[in-house]
Length: 147
Image 1 (cartoon, rainbow, N blue to C red):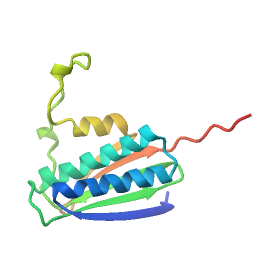
Image 2: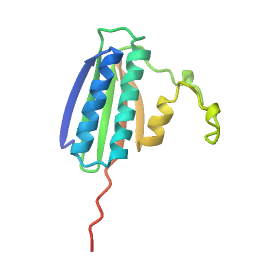
Image 3: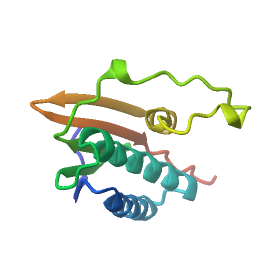
């Protein structure tokens, strides 16, 4: 299925630039009539992915591009966050073990992928020809028509 629309955003890998992506995602989600909570979830996931690229792929070094492609399909919105830094090694990602009923057991970091998987409908990561791409999709819910 071909995207009906696409926006490409590129920032330099500086942590202070991440909020620019967050504001853009929030604006796009609001423009697409997502409710406030869904808009926040989309913003949170994309900001987390861009932060991870900046911190982990580029080791917090400025001067590298982080790209975000926002694709709108009839049934979903998709975010592709790409970098050319160090690839994510799945075996380095630790499993989270905590009791959601006990706040003191929540980890202080390492929650990004967990959050993305919890809030998005699809999350995939791949590295092709030195380019890392995290793809996240959220299906659009059809508005109920009044009788």
